[in-house]
Length: 117
Image (tube, rainbow, N blue to C red):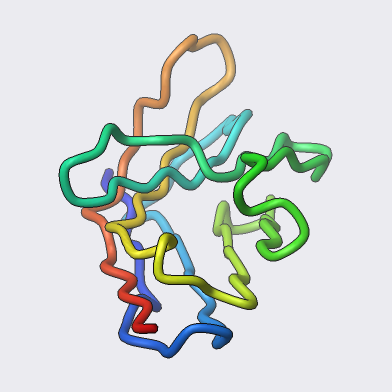
């Protein structure tokens, strides 16, 4: 099973995009869901994560601009990104961590977000 991330694209600074992540098949007992991103020449970083109860946490750089949500019924996740800035330009990856695992076992292929100034 792989995750399919979609919704990336080119947007001007101040604009918005909505990313979606869905599994290609059936997965069960998902604990944490998360969005990571990797900008050119930089390390991959955690952007936002949400537990099964829906409580989210965010990187300081996106707090107040990004909103992560999940649907436990079909194990999908979205990332609403508002007031995008050029420094948000990156490939965004979704990931899911099953219960009982310490790592994110499921990853998406990445979707490119480009923010022009």
